Amino acid sequence: MLQMEDIKSYTLKELEDLLREKAYPKFYAHQIFNWIYKKRVENFDLMTNLSKEARGFLKNNFYFSHLKLIERETSEDGTEKFLFELDDGHRIETVLIPEGKRVTLCVSTQVGCKFKCRFCVSGISGFKRNLRTSEIISQYLEVAKRIGRITNIVFMGIGEPLDNFDNVVKSIEILKEPHGIYFGRRRICISTLGIIPKIEKLRELNLGVKLSISLHSPDSKVRTFLMPATKKYPLQELMKAVKAFAKYERYPITFEYIMIRNLNTKKEDALKLVKLVKGINCKINLIPYNPSPYFEWKAPSIQEIEVFKNILKKCKIFFTLRKPRGEDIKAACGQLKATFKD
Ligand code: SF4
Image (cartoon, rainbow, N blue to C red; front, side, top):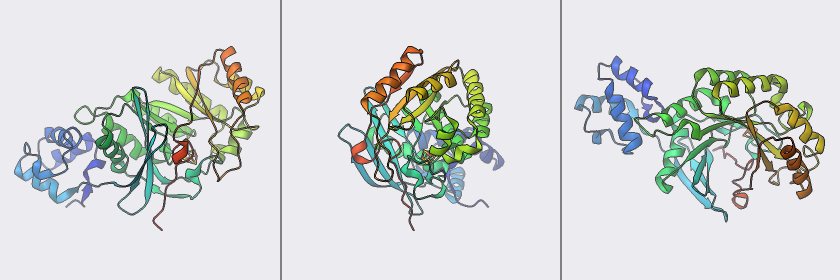
């Protein structure tokens, strides 16, 4: 007898294996995916193209978990922040960023974060637990049900996605599944501070998703100061892993670069950055720091941004300057926060 399991934590392959083991036809898994993710039906009794026995089996062994929407805030710029409560009472945030035809959902992967980067509110209260696969998928389902079309998904919310590797990979497999949501793999992006063994594992899995690296400084010392956890993953080693990933996937890697006044915005930083990424198929995403009461950092001056940008431009490094989004509702980069029940 199985323990009651959350059906939205099962990939198609896992469901097929289980059904085959219980002597049900494998194609039932396709039908179940179709009911849950295409027709959005969460009642096994309504899955009428399955046999009565199969529906009974599902009812006795599976349940549908739900995220409870506690609050939905809308920024002046159209960004939305959703506060969800999990089954055990912890709370996480998910952000929706509409921009022209592009509607990007930023999902969380952990309740809190253990890495405590010195510019990010998510790490301040520490770490509680990993999100289950179903809790990651449900962020998409709950928001899509309310707003409709979502064109891109970024794993950049609360938590380090590669620290919850298995559940993140399973959620991507479910998102991509043609019998279900069928979300384009190139429209999914995982962001990481650079956990090298997991980047290598991700490449081996050949998921086809995009990769974004939180770089924030081309100088090892400054980088380790900003993100103490990166001490374990030296910058030169990280760049080797990233180059291998870029070569294999053949699409640009994004390097995230939070610009903090008087810290990583000097002319020398820009020149060092150019040298570091030279030869890699990449894009630099410059993100002016969003001031937060938790940290003393300041946003870069306009002049700092201009000088930095001009060096990248002159050296033919492709970059974008991210407009701050959702600052007024604390939904911008580095501002998301989990709330623990206790
Ligand atoms: S930037 Fe990412 S890894 Fe660092 S504390 Fe925030 S959520 Fe955690």
